[in-house]
Image (tube, rainbow, N blue to C red; front, top):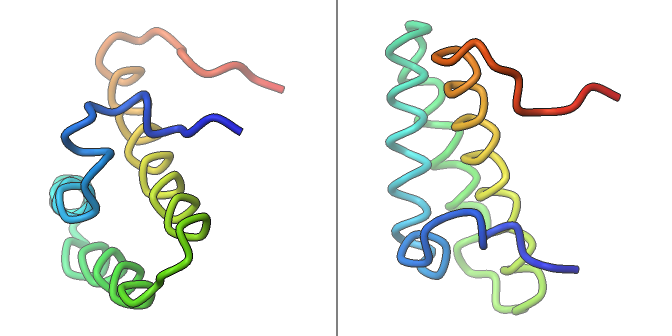
Length: 91
């Protein structure tokens, strides 16, 4: 299965620390808009800390894909709000 990370810039997708930082930035952005910044930032930190000692490359790739999927979904959501155009398809 191809990696979802190809939709993100390689300097973010290939590096877990940069991916973590981008997730924190998005959590702060969303949290600021919804007035729950601490909760969202803590959730991101908790997820990354829970898996920080993972050594299985396949599991690491899946975790990175999941984080990338979350970022992509948020970017699509924000783009839809700005443009008024729906990017995702309804099932």
